[in-house]
Amino acid sequence: MKNHDLKYVLKLELMQSLRSTWFWSYSILFGGFVAIMFALGITESQVIGFLGLGRLMITFMQVCIVVLPIYILITTVRSIVGDRETHVMEYFLSLPISFSSYLLGKFISRYIEIFTPVFLALTGAVLWGMFQGIDVPWDLFALYVVLLAVLTFCFLGIGMMISVKANTQTHAIGSAFILWLLLVALLDIILMGAMLKLRISPELVIGFGMINPLQVFRTGVLVLFDPSLTVMGAASYYILDTVGRGIFITFSIIYPLLLGFLFLWLSLRSFKNNDVV
Image 1 (cartoon, helix red, strand yellow):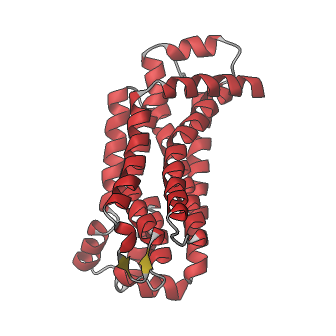
Image 2 (cartoon, one colour; image 1 turned 60 degrees about the vertical axis):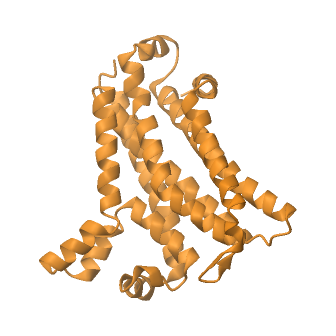
């Protein structure tokens, strides 16, 4: 893989994204959400000791749990299979560009396109809060930025894997939507129902739930929001007594990152070894 090949693909993908309605709608969504939260005075409310910008950032993260993964999956799974269906891939691969440069260029461009609006929205909230004289919880801001960064990386890796393996865009989008529904359902509903119905060990159920990157992200956000995890009920005792708050926050950062790298590596391997056109 040559650096200029990667830069070429990255530049083309970023230029295409800047002309996309999806990108600007997505950017306006997060920027507008922060503006609405300020307009509604949410920084003046208080929940479990959190107020000001801390309250706004918590609400922002709760929205990201639902919106960000499905947006990443739906838009990313079309990238490789879409180029294959429209024969754009044939043009790219007819140039002296390696498979690695092609896929990684798309991956990095997607990461920049998706993470930048989220980061700017959160940073804009902090800057506006500083202008208004509101205290900024810098430690909370830094940890939330890192959590959003690794969540984006994780689901981008999953999305790339689906896009490489799918035969059509319809198949890719359907697979992404089903996966998202399954991950959301496994946040609480199915796990708790299975534990009550089958009398499964709570430790086993919680351990299985921690495989879900959405559950890890959500719990990491809640640990920062509520150090005693009172909103999670009895599950909080097992999590905090077994690993502790600091270790779990570290786990909620490292695990999605490793998962993203794994799926990116698998997608790159499959892309190189199979008939991509």
